[in-house]
Length: 305
Length: 305
Image (cartoon, each protein chain N blue to C red):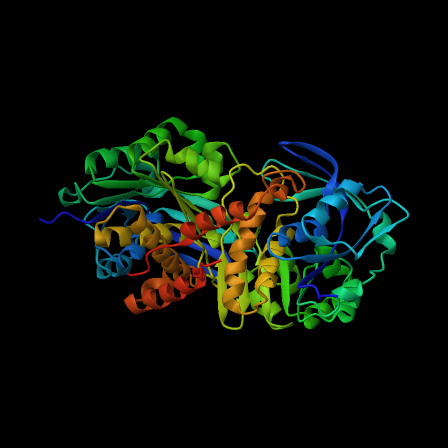
């Protein structure tokens, strides 16, 4: 029974999404799905989640084919978590039209034994009480968490406990501003780095991501995408690509983090080119390498003044 | 009579600005002032502008001490252009409270002979008819223009003529979206690159800037500033640092552009740390070099996958 290199706690969902480029009904979504699919380019990834009886078997089969371990995914009576949202012309922010928690409302994670003591654990956005419970049960070598605006305002104390317990915090710019109480992302990043294990990633959508660790500061610009079809899952895919690439090599130093964030940016750039996971489901290592080479060129310049 | 390496057409203003960090009354401002002060770190810069009799002599003396050539600055009867604005908590967008064009309303640029056939010309935001007139009279080797939302909606045809005539377009993200009619900055940049001489810089404030030229794409992240006091002039200073550095070396290729944009980001990062030009007026080459070294580190990563 081999320990897994990477485990993620996150949602699996059926999403209904409308963007200026079309509409998709009940398509595969959820933070765990996006994170795991992205991470699977680089590492085996166990998933702790829950779905209802309505969850299409072909989705589970697809994720298993990607190399994900689904023994931590409970299939239970009831309907799968459903999110309905739309994006306006500028594609920057989703408007949530409807959220049906369904089976997620009574979700109590069941952790397979082989998930324990994994190298890397990612706690995607979910009730911080559940994040803490999973963190304590899994006891990973390295851990990261995400969150969302709701938990920052409604469960700040529990969330702070999660922040204090993990090695790295991965949040978007709005969440960083909200938690820290400052609009300045540099201050917000430093403040968050002082709470937990010291590593912080602030995701800025199309503008890329910032990395804080001690005196280290790194900025990973977004990969340029001309035809954004659906931004849903971009942040979770960025996290999945980044942490999946860390897990592949089992390295947890700042230099490896930077490179892995560039990789995460590449994976996220594919995700937004289609609805659901359509943009990455048929991509392989050669696609990652090609866009990574292009990414390297777009940030490189001759340094001599 | 030596030809100048760099000439800028732009405004000189007395600004009244309020930010969460304080208020400044009738301080030195204007696109020409910011551009020229930033460019003067690297190159002699001639300025084509106009001020009123109320314009403090010490401002002119300061700019001359910076190495600017002010023979193109007309001092005329009337009051100097005055802009009053404020920034809210997030410091991202200025709200204009009042604009008094004053002497700018009847401005007809007078071009000193030694400004003609300069190497680099920057046409800062002003009536596109004036931009075109100056461009045709100066006949520089390389030219760039900026603009603003008002001209895009009110003088689109004249503005398009300017875009077609220059070698490079330097606009912010909102202007790029407005002119191109697409919210996607990659598409907007490519569209603008197809109109004029082919080089386009899209400024994104704290998120840095994008560069388009043929098949080249480059992204220069913003330098992280924790204590932004006043963002006024950041975009013009970025342009001044970038084009001033191009002019210093007299080189106009894409590789030099990229490096120069990194330099421009550094100069702009100093500007926002104070009101008016307080953040850069006492800075020297060692300050630029220090922050440039830090900038290089924050975008560098080990490329091997």
